[in-house]
Amino acid sequence: MSKRLTRSSSDRVIAGVAGGFGRYLGIDPVVIRLLLIVLIFFGGAGLIVYGAAWLIVPSDDHQGEGFDGRGVARRTGIALGVVALTLVALVGGFWGFAFGGGTAVAIAVIVIGAALVLGAFTGGARWLIVPAIALAMGAGVAAAADLDVRGGVGERIYRPASAASLRSDYKLGAGHLLLDLRNTNLGPGNHRVHLKLGVGQAEVLVPPNVCVSSTAHISGGETQVFDRTTGGTNHDWQDIHRAPAGTPQLTVDADIGFGQLRIEPGVGVQGVNGACANG
Amino acid sequence: MARPRDVAALVAGVLIAAFGLLLLLDAGGSLHLHFAALAPIAALIGGATLLAAGLTRHD
Image (cartoon, rainbow over the protein chains, first blue to last red):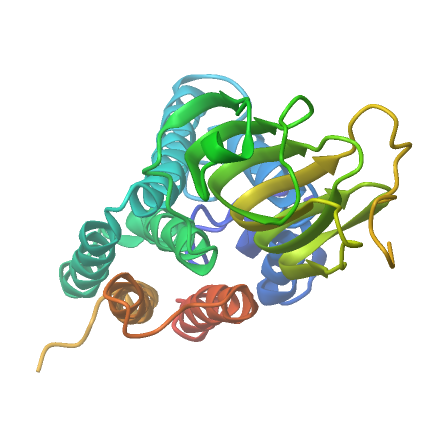
């Protein structure tokens, strides 16, 4: 009798896919599980492979249950339900924390963890593990990024006419924050601007003949200042210059959760910080 | 004391609740979670859960 590939009902973490493959191939299912976890980091391939195998491969306790019939519909429903719940938990944890609900989300994670502990004694709680991890990690990413998106959502465009109307702070929760200074008469002296952005792009368009210094902390993303670009996670940017006497100095300090800081030159300054003494 | 029917859920629950405590401390400003710590924490939770499931499987 030929060997048949089935999901294991006795050796399973979620649906017995790894247990079944391990038994079929004659290797330890833990190796299959580790491979699937590694594949998750390659575009989610591990989840797709697991989901497809869950749908297609029958369970060993229902030998007649194959590629068609009510078994597939039932497994599809369960898989879609768990995937949907996991996505909701991931997104909910992230945005809940980012919108200032950190304490509530943290308490929810603790309560769900406690529910899993209780469920370990009563049974039937295993399905909750993946959504619970998703909720915790979504919140964890927002916490690590020190994300705060309570400053509003959308596009904010500021075009101050003069140095007097230039504010010291500009804040946006999520979206595009544009500070267009190309037609701003800054005048001599040092002008400091602090930009705080949760998620999105902060863009500063500077006028010609202004020496620009910039510092930034970005939890995840990119800094593009004139002709220089750098990026990564938890990266700090510092580009300090000194303006010659009589030349206006603009100092931009940005604090960005996830996204990009972009400082672009105005007309007549071809991609370099040309107005600075040492620029 | 009753033996747990599902050790994997027990391990995952304890670790997730502990991580929730870290999140609570972060939200309160007592500590700050860093990205560098997230991947090891995720690997710890996932790995310990899989290990518990593997060690208690019913052959």
